[in-house]
Image (tube, rainbow, N blue to C red; front, side, top):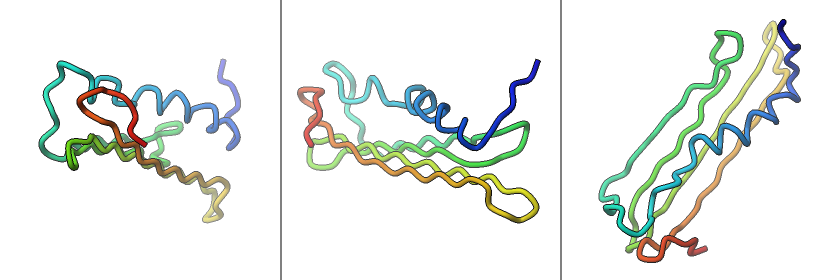
Length: 102
């Protein structure tokens, strides 16, 4: 049985996507520091069709871990855009304490 997928149903997928790609262990005590930019990119598919990307980058800047996240989703039909979603976030973490710095 296949459930109908509407553009609004993508909003339910975003928290799951962010939860699965969130850097849980980054910046925790005992973890080695990130010295270079670490980049992860994920393709987002709907019914075997690429509809977007989710990108997460991590880097160290002045003894702080900076995590930037970006999501772009676009669904169109016959050249008309039916749904568009854009998300950008930046988190800064104090590496020595593993807590958010602001």
